[in-house]
Image (cartoon, rainbow, N blue to C red; front, side, top):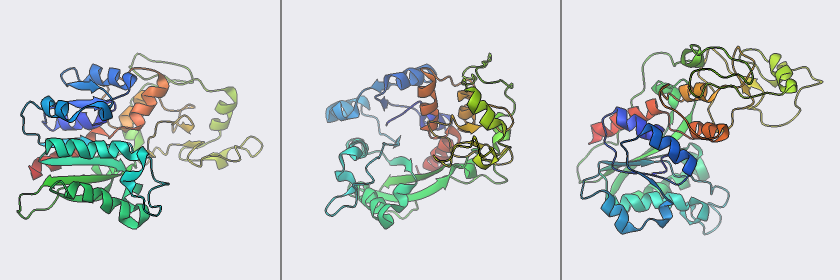
Length: 323
């Protein structure tokens, strides 16, 4: 569900799962998904417009092992107002669609991935409300915040996982992915092998194209040292306000900061430019043969919104254990 470019799908493919169908509503994103998953059945549709019977028919009588997805949940400000529940907010309609698909297909398990603040929102009330929706369908459910860097991803990325299993009145624990032993991978481990390029340059490697930076931006970033920030920039040209996560340089000795859909003002640790889509995708653990299509802005959004495939594989292995 809400497949995006397919990071979640790829990790489950790697773990040996077979795709029955995927749903995504954005045409540009669907082009990328189709290119990389030619054997998956992708529905380029608005999930709210797909009737119950069509969803049932799509599985053709198969017993579904798992439904996965990360429904967009924007309705934080209204949730918690007197008499209003998280699921009542119209901006969280897609969460209810995820619940609907689970209720229709009754998979043995489900995994719902989302932003970490869902876990602590309203002192845990939102988390418990979400769990209750699935418990009413007959699932044992647990939730946990995971950091991707603990599972082999060279990035500090916190997300909440809601994992459920259809209850059969036996005692068991919900399984979460197993952490990888050893030191976390660094951003340098992930991207140092790519050929150096400058602002506006491209390479023969797909998606390894540097954005064009203005002369003013190039001057500002030239002062920022490896792992440094805007305080490295001389005061007379230093940006005085704005997001503190901007005008910083990646620290080559650590996992990357969290990759989002807009990383234009976060700079390569030793090159004077922002990272390319290829480098951002590598930090998200996409392999080089995974090609992103569409506009550069859309490519960055696809990468930033992904579940890292290596984390997705670890989740898939946990689901296999439960099954």
